[in-house]
Length: 214
Length: 214
DNA sequence: GCGAGTTGACTGACCAGTCAATCTATCCAC
DNA sequence: GTGGATAGATTGACTGGTCAGTCAACTCGC
Image (tube, each protein chain N blue to C red):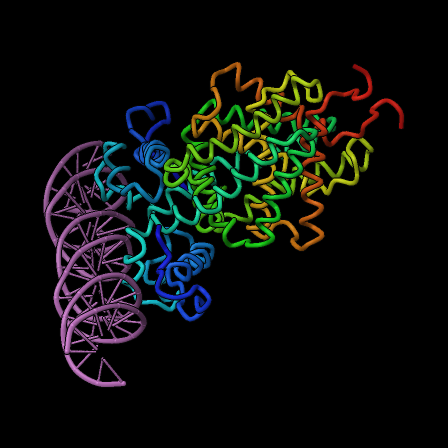
């Protein structure tokens, strides 16, 4: 964990290349290109321009490299959802913020999101199992937003919040998957549109028919 | 392919155990339990109660076993969608039939659906790539149903049909994933409810606000 | 000259796929 | 109906290649 070296005045940080970071960044590219199982540790080392053994200086195993990548990013997302959740906003905007964050994450670093989704989030037999509690945490918070909206009468009560959360998250992830597989057009405007569409579609189906009366 | 032996009068078929089938069935259980990459070919042979080498008598490779399982089932689904598509039904009912079929498939053989989803449909770097055209075919037909409904004015036009198809299919697959991961309650009544919820949610969001006028 | 950082050849385990041997059902010649 | 031939089904020990992880040696800044 303790990455700080305390050796230099932080200003000269550039001069000391962060090999650990280089390895993580290289791993993202390699995992995205070849997949976790299909790639060799030497592929990561080569991509990082680093000796094979150095990876084991910074990480105890190949698995741990992927886990680190996942936990880093997923942690940011959980924090973001928690942040959004704590504010008092309409459910539609909360869900919109979450959709935005996920889509922006993809737009900003498609490889990383591909790796997280393909190798962790959807890998029910390997890392998905290992990090189930983290993943579950996200679903839980989304479900809470839905429950809250149901209590406020904004969302229909007959739709189970757990299911709604799954459907919402699933819709987003599938759109990302569409981009990952190259099945859906990408680009700034498509990303923006996707955010709206997902929220529009899912919230449209969840909201009570007559938003005027009570 | 030619499984017929022509040796017996088909009535005594029971006496001739279908090893090929036994291997496929065993593979489903093993893949579901351990995952494709984590299991060994000998695990499949053991589970099928068959010698190691026999698997290679019926299949050219371990990969081919999984591909066979996927193509068998996915083919049935494509045929079913095509069938539904050809009838003249409201879009909501068409999508409902598709959701029903997928959920029923899971209810009927959870292991098989788990394998198909986890190891193929969502495996962007391995089998998902290999069978992309098959997978794409399903998305395409769902998108066509949406397009048709948009032309009829039943669905909003501002939502891209491709995206809608992805969101719809993604919502279902995520609900299955919830069951697979043990995050969502299972059982006959939950399965029935899930069908309604997915259709209700997604169609609710896609349909034009005022279905009365026009 | 100390130690963290770095190197890459090597090892041990694992496992997909091969193959020669064995088994069994069916058929035919007599 | 008996023996033997034939071919497909079945067996499992073995091979070859792969690759995660180890470790002894080297570098270099302080």
